[in-house]
Amino acid sequence: MIVAFSRFLLLGYLVGIVVSCSKPSSNIPEIDQKIFAAYWEQGKGELSSYTLDQSRYNVQHEGSVVLVFATEEMSNTKQVRLDDPKRNSGDAVKVLKLNTNKEFVTGLNKYSMMSSVFTPLDYNEHARSFKLSTSCQDWDGQSYTQLNWKGNRYEVKQMSYEESEDDKSFSLVSTWLEDEIWTKIRVAPNTLPIGNVTMIPSVMYSHLSLQPIKAYDAVASIKSDSAEYTYSIQYPEIKRAIDINFQKSFPYKIIGWKETSGNNEVTTARISNTIISDYWLHNQPQDSVLRDELHLK
Image 1: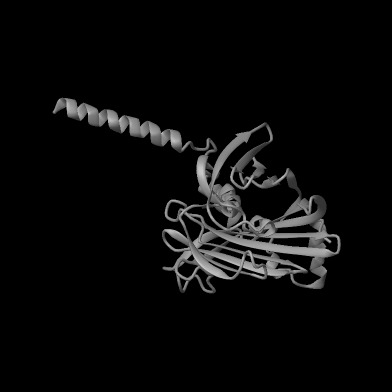
Image 2: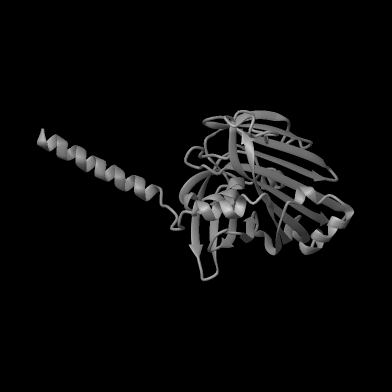
């Protein structure tokens, strides 16, 4: 009996080693929630503009990206923003929303792309982002993709003018979204996945490359220098890699990123400026001066 118990202890020890080795963790400290609330719950959003060098058709194209981060109350059941969170307090979940707005021109054709991801602040209670929606428009046509978290899977709805994408609905098992890494950096960078993972690549990338929306094996890592962290994801099967650079201290602002795919096609973006604003109230012609602050045309 003693021998059997010893074997049991040894087995538990070995399993513990395997688990700890297969799930390395980030050394970024957990965010102080008082500091987090002081920044993110002041009734305003964070708007950052980026200069974009977009690879498309084997050449580079100038463009711009705006990242809009803001907290809001979302319905846990309907997965939409609540009009009256106090009336629906039992269904309300505080999330960090990211709207990514990308524009670039390829000769005559103009691309306008937007994605929205909604990531709960309570990552212990809600491990996955609730929702991701992405729309892509250019002068050929448009596409729309939405992923909704349903307990242990993502339900996907995809509509497109492209035959290879087609109109379809399907499910994807629980996994990481590349699109939620950006909000995870802002909410809890200490929880970023490290090592061998499965991940659904950016839907914008999937549309531009006509890759199927599914989970791929990936390798994620994080490194730092004196100025910033770099979070990297590599997808061997589809020859894609992305490096996301962000500040070394709170609020962990996104500084820029680099995407590499195919035959060394490289897209880069670097921050231009950031403003904190209740932007939804600035809807008059004279408010366009705020666009000047973001260096937007």
